[in-house]
Image (tube, rainbow, N blue to C red; front, side):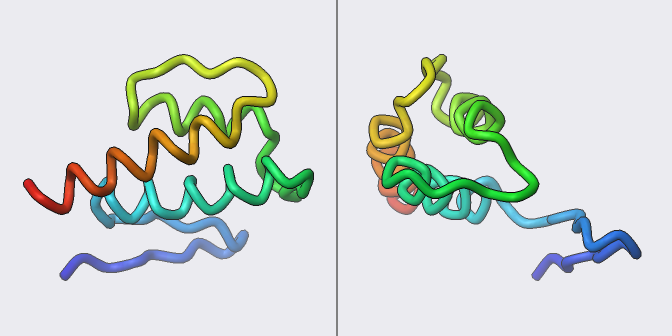
Length: 80
């Protein structure tokens, strides 16, 4: 099992796999699709991170689509 290293600033270096990152970003996308925001990540940053995993370039406001694509990616990764 890989570890989680926390720096003094509260930022963390996640040595976890892509699936963990995808689940976390999917949660952010779902909340942002409902209108919520994050204090440390902009909506654009979350879409860019989702795009790095799925390979799709998302436009502003496509958080619900990104969440669907991440769900499909996670399911595909589980079967692999």
